[in-house]
Image 1 (cartoon, rainbow, N blue to C red):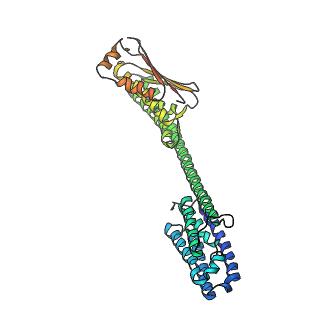
Image 2: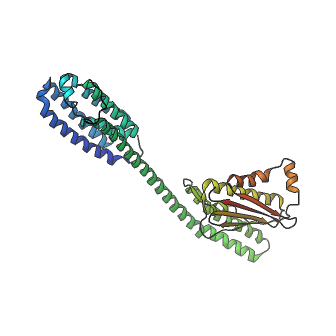
Image 3: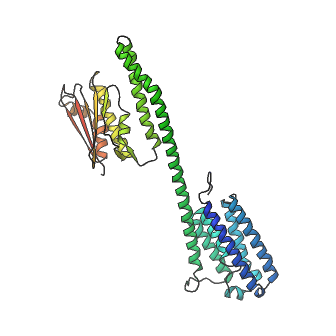
Length: 377
Protein backbone atom coordinates (compact mmCIF):
# COMPACT_ATOMS: atom_id res chain seq x y z
CA UNK A 1 0.00 0.00 0.00
CA UNK A 2 1.30 3.49 -0.76
CA UNK A 3 2.47 5.58 2.13
CA UNK A 4 3.26 9.25 2.56
CA UNK A 5 6.80 9.88 3.67
CA UNK A 6 9.16 7.08 4.68
CA UNK A 7 7.68 3.59 4.37
CA UNK A 8 7.47 2.10 7.88
CA UNK A 9 7.80 -1.37 6.34
CA UNK A 10 11.07 -0.45 4.55
CA UNK A 11 13.25 -2.58 6.88
CA UNK A 12 11.05 -5.58 6.09
CA UNK A 13 11.40 -4.92 2.35
CA UNK A 14 15.18 -4.83 2.75
CA UNK A 15 15.16 -8.08 4.73
CA UNK A 16 13.02 -9.65 1.99
CA UNK A 17 15.70 -8.83 -0.59
CA UNK A 18 18.30 -10.60 1.55
CA UNK A 19 16.05 -13.64 1.45
CA UNK A 20 15.73 -13.17 -2.32
CA UNK A 21 19.54 -13.21 -2.69
CA UNK A 22 19.88 -16.38 -0.62
CA UNK A 23 17.07 -18.07 -2.56
CA UNK A 24 18.82 -17.18 -5.85
CA UNK A 25 22.05 -18.73 -4.59
CA UNK A 26 20.12 -21.85 -3.59
CA UNK A 27 18.42 -21.93 -7.01
CA UNK A 28 21.84 -21.62 -8.69
CA UNK A 29 23.19 -24.58 -6.74
CA UNK A 30 20.08 -26.59 -7.61
CA UNK A 31 20.40 -25.62 -11.28
CA UNK A 32 24.03 -26.77 -11.43
CA UNK A 33 23.15 -30.06 -9.72
CA UNK A 34 20.17 -31.06 -11.86
CA UNK A 35 20.69 -29.28 -15.19
CA UNK A 36 22.04 -32.38 -16.93
CA UNK A 37 18.92 -34.30 -15.87
CA UNK A 38 16.58 -31.82 -17.59
CA UNK A 39 14.99 -32.62 -20.90
CA UNK A 40 16.26 -29.29 -22.38
CA UNK A 41 19.36 -28.23 -20.42
CA UNK A 42 20.13 -25.19 -22.63
CA UNK A 43 16.60 -23.88 -22.26
CA UNK A 44 16.94 -24.46 -18.56
CA UNK A 45 19.96 -22.17 -18.39
CA UNK A 46 18.25 -19.52 -20.53
CA UNK A 47 15.23 -19.52 -18.25
CA UNK A 48 17.53 -19.40 -15.24
CA UNK A 49 19.06 -16.25 -16.76
CA UNK A 50 15.56 -14.77 -16.87
CA UNK A 51 15.14 -15.75 -13.23
CA UNK A 52 18.34 -13.93 -12.20
CA UNK A 53 17.50 -10.84 -14.27
CA UNK A 54 13.98 -10.64 -12.85
CA UNK A 55 15.24 -11.16 -9.29
CA UNK A 56 17.75 -8.33 -9.73
CA UNK A 57 15.05 -6.05 -11.13
CA UNK A 58 12.70 -6.83 -8.23
CA UNK A 59 15.42 -6.31 -5.64
CA UNK A 60 16.35 -2.94 -7.16
CA UNK A 61 12.71 -1.82 -7.42
CA UNK A 62 11.81 -2.82 -3.87
CA UNK A 63 14.97 -1.39 -2.34
CA UNK A 64 14.54 1.92 -4.18
CA UNK A 65 10.87 2.01 -3.26
CA UNK A 66 9.25 2.55 -6.65
CA UNK A 67 8.38 -1.15 -6.91
CA UNK A 68 6.32 -1.19 -3.70
CA UNK A 69 3.08 -0.95 -5.64
CA UNK A 70 0.33 -3.46 -6.34
CA UNK A 71 1.09 -3.62 -10.08
CA UNK A 72 4.73 -4.57 -9.51
CA UNK A 73 3.91 -7.22 -6.91
CA UNK A 74 1.23 -8.73 -9.15
CA UNK A 75 3.76 -8.78 -12.00
CA UNK A 76 6.18 -10.69 -9.78
CA UNK A 77 3.51 -13.28 -9.00
CA UNK A 78 2.78 -13.75 -12.72
CA UNK A 79 6.48 -14.11 -13.64
CA UNK A 80 7.09 -16.68 -10.89
CA UNK A 81 4.02 -18.71 -11.90
CA UNK A 82 5.17 -18.71 -15.54
CA UNK A 83 8.70 -19.81 -14.62
CA UNK A 84 7.29 -22.62 -12.46
CA UNK A 85 5.01 -23.64 -15.31
CA UNK A 86 8.05 -23.88 -17.61
CA UNK A 87 8.75 -27.26 -15.95
CA UNK A 88 6.57 -28.75 -18.68
CA UNK A 89 9.11 -27.44 -21.22
CA UNK A 90 12.48 -28.06 -19.59
CA UNK A 91 11.75 -31.25 -17.64
CA UNK A 92 10.04 -34.56 -18.21
CA UNK A 93 6.82 -35.39 -16.31
CA UNK A 94 8.62 -38.10 -14.38
CA UNK A 95 11.41 -35.73 -13.29
CA UNK A 96 8.83 -33.10 -12.27
CA UNK A 97 7.00 -35.68 -10.17
CA UNK A 98 10.17 -36.91 -8.45
CA UNK A 99 11.81 -33.52 -7.71
CA UNK A 100 10.87 -30.14 -6.35
CA UNK A 101 9.49 -27.77 -8.92
CA UNK A 102 12.08 -25.92 -10.97
CA UNK A 103 13.36 -23.31 -10.11
CA UNK A 104 12.90 -24.45 -6.46
CA UNK A 105 9.99 -23.75 -4.15
CA UNK A 106 12.32 -21.68 -1.94
CA UNK A 107 12.81 -19.10 -4.70
CA UNK A 108 9.09 -19.26 -5.50
CA UNK A 109 8.37 -18.02 -1.96
CA UNK A 110 9.58 -14.52 -2.88
CA UNK A 111 6.22 -13.32 -4.29
CA UNK A 112 4.49 -14.63 -1.15
CA UNK A 113 6.69 -12.34 0.95
CA UNK A 114 6.24 -9.38 -1.38
CA UNK A 115 2.46 -9.81 -1.44
CA UNK A 116 2.32 -10.06 2.35
CA UNK A 117 4.28 -6.80 2.66
CA UNK A 118 2.09 -5.04 0.10
CA UNK A 119 -1.38 -6.47 0.79
CA UNK A 120 -1.12 -7.85 4.32
CA UNK A 121 -1.59 -11.36 5.66
CA UNK A 122 -4.58 -12.17 3.44
CA UNK A 123 -2.68 -11.21 0.28
CA UNK A 124 0.40 -13.15 1.36
CA UNK A 125 -1.53 -16.31 2.17
CA UNK A 126 -3.50 -16.09 -1.08
CA UNK A 127 -0.25 -15.78 -3.03
CA UNK A 128 1.13 -18.78 -1.17
CA UNK A 129 -1.90 -20.77 -2.27
CA UNK A 130 -1.37 -19.65 -5.89
CA UNK A 131 2.28 -20.74 -5.76
CA UNK A 132 1.36 -24.14 -4.33
CA UNK A 133 -1.50 -24.60 -6.81
CA UNK A 134 1.03 -24.02 -9.61
CA UNK A 135 3.37 -26.51 -7.96
CA UNK A 136 0.66 -29.19 -7.85
CA UNK A 137 -0.37 -28.45 -11.43
CA UNK A 138 3.21 -28.92 -12.64
CA UNK A 139 3.51 -32.23 -10.79
CA UNK A 140 0.09 -33.41 -11.99
CA UNK A 141 -1.11 -34.40 -8.53
CA UNK A 142 -2.72 -32.84 -5.48
CA UNK A 143 -1.94 -34.02 -1.95
CA UNK A 144 -2.51 -32.66 1.53
CA UNK A 145 -0.25 -35.20 3.20
CA UNK A 146 2.08 -32.96 5.25
CA UNK A 147 4.13 -35.79 6.70
CA UNK A 148 6.61 -35.68 3.81
CA UNK A 149 5.99 -32.24 2.30
CA UNK A 150 4.99 -29.28 4.47
CA UNK A 151 5.59 -26.66 1.77
CA UNK A 152 1.94 -25.59 1.74
CA UNK A 153 1.96 -24.93 5.48
CA UNK A 154 5.25 -23.04 5.15
CA UNK A 155 3.87 -20.82 2.38
CA UNK A 156 0.77 -19.97 4.42
CA UNK A 157 2.85 -19.34 7.55
CA UNK A 158 5.18 -17.00 5.63
CA UNK A 159 2.27 -15.02 4.24
CA UNK A 160 0.61 -14.76 7.64
CA UNK A 161 3.72 -13.85 9.65
CA UNK A 162 5.18 -11.33 7.21
CA UNK A 163 1.79 -9.69 6.68
CA UNK A 164 1.26 -9.30 10.42
CA UNK A 165 4.75 -7.86 10.82
CA UNK A 166 4.13 -5.30 8.07
CA UNK A 167 0.78 -4.30 9.56
CA UNK A 168 2.32 -3.93 13.02
CA UNK A 169 5.13 -1.77 11.64
CA UNK A 170 2.71 0.53 9.83
CA UNK A 171 0.41 0.82 12.85
CA UNK A 172 3.33 1.63 15.15
CA UNK A 173 4.50 4.26 12.66
CA UNK A 174 1.04 5.87 12.57
CA UNK A 175 0.82 5.96 16.36
CA UNK A 176 4.30 7.49 16.58
CA UNK A 177 3.37 10.15 14.04
CA UNK A 178 0.16 10.96 15.92
CA UNK A 179 2.06 11.24 19.20
CA UNK A 180 4.66 13.48 17.56
CA UNK A 181 1.96 15.75 16.11
CA UNK A 182 0.18 15.99 19.45
CA UNK A 183 3.44 16.78 21.21
CA UNK A 184 4.31 19.49 18.68
CA UNK A 185 0.81 20.97 18.91
CA UNK A 186 0.99 20.99 22.70
CA UNK A 187 4.35 22.75 22.64
CA UNK A 188 2.99 25.34 20.22
CA UNK A 189 -0.11 25.88 22.37
CA UNK A 190 2.03 26.36 25.45
CA UNK A 191 4.26 28.84 23.60
CA UNK A 192 1.23 30.85 22.46
CA UNK A 193 -0.24 30.67 25.95
CA UNK A 194 2.94 32.13 27.42
CA UNK A 195 2.96 34.93 24.86
CA UNK A 196 -0.69 35.75 25.45
CA UNK A 197 -0.27 35.56 29.22
CA UNK A 198 2.85 37.74 29.23
CA UNK A 199 1.32 40.30 26.88
CA UNK A 200 -2.39 40.67 26.30
CA UNK A 201 -3.72 39.11 29.51
CA UNK A 202 -1.42 41.16 31.75
CA UNK A 203 -2.37 44.37 29.95
CA UNK A 204 -6.08 43.59 30.27
CA UNK A 205 -5.67 42.76 33.95
CA UNK A 206 -3.84 46.06 34.50
CA UNK A 207 -6.53 48.03 32.64
CA UNK A 208 -9.26 46.35 34.71
CA UNK A 209 -7.46 47.03 37.97
CA UNK A 210 -6.68 50.68 37.23
CA UNK A 211 -10.14 51.29 35.81
CA UNK A 212 -11.83 50.07 38.98
CA UNK A 213 -9.44 52.15 41.09
CA UNK A 214 -10.22 55.31 39.11
CA UNK A 215 -13.97 54.62 39.09
CA UNK A 216 -16.52 56.69 37.32
CA UNK A 217 -16.87 56.27 33.58
CA UNK A 218 -13.72 54.11 33.41
CA UNK A 219 -15.45 51.38 35.45
CA UNK A 220 -17.33 50.25 32.35
CA UNK A 221 -14.04 50.02 30.44
CA UNK A 222 -12.56 48.08 33.36
CA UNK A 223 -15.48 45.62 33.27
CA UNK A 224 -14.98 45.07 29.53
CA UNK A 225 -11.24 44.49 30.03
CA UNK A 226 -11.95 42.04 32.86
CA UNK A 227 -14.45 40.15 30.70
CA UNK A 228 -11.99 39.87 27.80
CA UNK A 229 -9.26 38.71 30.18
CA UNK A 230 -11.45 35.85 31.39
CA UNK A 231 -12.45 35.01 27.80
CA UNK A 232 -8.79 34.74 26.80
CA UNK A 233 -8.02 32.53 29.76
CA UNK A 234 -10.93 30.25 28.81
CA UNK A 235 -9.69 30.10 25.21
CA UNK A 236 -6.17 29.13 26.31
CA UNK A 237 -7.65 26.32 28.40
CA UNK A 238 -10.10 25.09 25.76
CA UNK A 239 -7.47 24.73 23.01
CA UNK A 240 -6.05 21.74 24.87
CA UNK A 241 -9.30 19.90 24.17
CA UNK A 242 -8.90 20.44 20.44
CA UNK A 243 -5.36 19.07 20.52
CA UNK A 244 -6.50 15.96 22.46
CA UNK A 245 -9.52 15.15 20.30
CA UNK A 246 -8.05 11.76 19.33
CA UNK A 247 -7.76 10.57 22.94
CA UNK A 248 -10.37 8.36 24.60
CA UNK A 249 -10.56 10.44 27.79
CA UNK A 250 -10.80 14.14 28.55
CA UNK A 251 -10.27 16.29 31.62
CA UNK A 252 -13.75 17.36 32.74
CA UNK A 253 -12.27 20.48 34.35
CA UNK A 254 -11.21 21.83 30.97
CA UNK A 255 -14.74 21.40 29.61
CA UNK A 256 -16.41 23.10 32.56
CA UNK A 257 -13.87 25.92 32.78
CA UNK A 258 -15.01 27.19 29.37
CA UNK A 259 -18.38 28.01 30.95
CA UNK A 260 -16.90 30.35 33.54
CA UNK A 261 -17.97 33.98 33.20
CA UNK A 262 -18.92 37.17 35.02
CA UNK A 263 -21.96 35.51 36.56
CA UNK A 264 -20.68 31.93 36.63
CA UNK A 265 -18.09 30.95 39.24
CA UNK A 266 -16.21 27.68 39.13
CA UNK A 267 -14.81 25.60 41.97
CA UNK A 268 -12.69 22.85 40.43
CA UNK A 269 -10.22 20.28 41.85
CA UNK A 270 -6.52 20.95 41.58
CA UNK A 271 -5.90 17.66 39.76
CA UNK A 272 -7.34 16.32 36.50
CA UNK A 273 -10.74 14.65 36.48
CA UNK A 274 -10.47 12.21 33.55
CA UNK A 275 -13.67 10.85 32.03
CA UNK A 276 -14.56 8.99 28.86
CA UNK A 277 -14.93 11.59 26.12
CA UNK A 278 -18.61 10.89 25.40
CA UNK A 279 -19.57 10.82 29.09
CA UNK A 280 -17.68 14.05 29.80
CA UNK A 281 -19.35 15.78 26.84
CA UNK A 282 -22.83 14.70 27.99
CA UNK A 283 -22.19 15.78 31.59
CA UNK A 284 -20.84 19.12 30.39
CA UNK A 285 -23.93 19.56 28.22
CA UNK A 286 -26.18 18.89 31.22
CA UNK A 287 -24.29 21.56 33.18
CA UNK A 288 -24.76 23.90 30.21
CA UNK A 289 -28.51 23.27 30.28
CA UNK A 290 -28.63 24.07 34.00
CA UNK A 291 -26.73 27.34 33.42
CA UNK A 292 -29.08 28.19 30.55
CA UNK A 293 -31.99 27.82 32.97
CA UNK A 294 -30.25 30.20 35.38
CA UNK A 295 -29.87 32.84 32.68
CA UNK A 296 -33.45 32.36 31.48
CA UNK A 297 -35.41 31.96 34.70
CA UNK A 298 -33.37 32.85 37.81
CA UNK A 299 -33.52 36.61 37.32
CA UNK A 300 -31.38 39.31 35.68
CA UNK A 301 -28.94 39.62 38.61
CA UNK A 302 -28.67 35.94 39.48
CA UNK A 303 -25.24 34.37 39.80
CA UNK A 304 -24.39 30.69 39.32
CA UNK A 305 -21.84 28.61 41.20
CA UNK A 306 -20.45 25.32 39.83
CA UNK A 307 -18.72 22.81 42.10
CA UNK A 308 -16.95 19.74 40.69
CA UNK A 309 -16.09 16.84 43.01
CA UNK A 310 -14.14 13.74 42.05
CA UNK A 311 -15.27 10.95 44.39
CA UNK A 312 -13.18 8.20 42.79
CA UNK A 313 -15.86 5.81 41.58
CA UNK A 314 -18.18 8.69 40.65
CA UNK A 315 -18.15 12.37 39.71
CA UNK A 316 -20.55 14.98 41.07
CA UNK A 317 -21.22 18.44 39.66
CA UNK A 318 -23.38 20.89 41.62
CA UNK A 319 -24.88 23.89 39.83
CA UNK A 320 -26.37 26.40 42.29
CA UNK A 321 -27.77 29.89 41.76
CA UNK A 322 -28.98 32.71 44.01
CA UNK A 323 -32.00 33.48 41.87
CA UNK A 324 -35.75 33.49 42.47
CA UNK A 325 -36.09 29.69 42.70
CA UNK A 326 -38.87 27.51 41.35
CA UNK A 327 -42.30 27.43 42.92
CA UNK A 328 -43.92 24.21 44.10
CA UNK A 329 -45.73 22.42 41.32
CA UNK A 330 -44.19 24.57 38.58
CA UNK A 331 -42.19 21.71 37.06
CA UNK A 332 -45.19 19.38 37.12
CA UNK A 333 -47.27 22.07 35.45
CA UNK A 334 -44.64 22.56 32.72
CA UNK A 335 -44.46 18.81 32.14
CA UNK A 336 -48.25 18.62 31.88
CA UNK A 337 -48.16 21.32 29.23
CA UNK A 338 -45.63 19.32 27.18
CA UNK A 339 -42.59 21.45 28.08
CA UNK A 340 -40.09 18.69 28.85
CA UNK A 341 -36.89 20.68 28.44
CA UNK A 342 -35.49 20.07 31.92
CA UNK A 343 -36.39 16.38 32.12
CA UNK A 344 -35.00 15.61 28.67
CA UNK A 345 -31.91 17.82 28.65
CA UNK A 346 -30.68 17.31 32.20
CA UNK A 347 -32.42 14.32 33.82
CA UNK A 348 -32.50 12.35 30.55
CA UNK A 349 -28.83 12.93 29.89
CA UNK A 350 -27.81 11.81 33.36
CA UNK A 351 -30.01 8.70 33.18
CA UNK A 352 -28.44 7.76 29.83
CA UNK A 353 -25.04 7.85 31.55
CA UNK A 354 -26.25 5.64 34.39
CA UNK A 355 -26.29 8.59 36.79
CA UNK A 356 -28.94 10.79 38.33
CA UNK A 357 -29.93 14.44 38.60
CA UNK A 358 -31.42 15.81 41.81
CA UNK A 359 -33.12 19.22 41.97
CA UNK A 360 -33.46 21.26 45.15
CA UNK A 361 -35.25 24.61 45.03
CA UNK A 362 -37.38 27.01 47.07
CA UNK A 363 -39.02 30.26 46.06
CA UNK A 364 -36.60 33.07 46.86
CA UNK A 365 -33.85 30.61 47.82
CA UNK A 366 -32.43 29.83 44.39
CA UNK A 367 -32.03 26.49 42.68
CA UNK A 368 -29.44 23.72 42.92
CA UNK A 369 -28.86 20.80 40.57
CA UNK A 370 -26.71 17.92 41.80
CA UNK A 371 -25.53 15.79 38.88
CA UNK A 372 -23.90 12.48 39.80
CA UNK A 373 -22.35 10.08 37.30
CA UNK A 374 -20.57 6.77 38.03
CA UNK A 375 -17.29 6.20 36.22
CA UNK A 376 -18.47 2.73 35.17
CA UNK A 377 -22.05 2.02 34.25
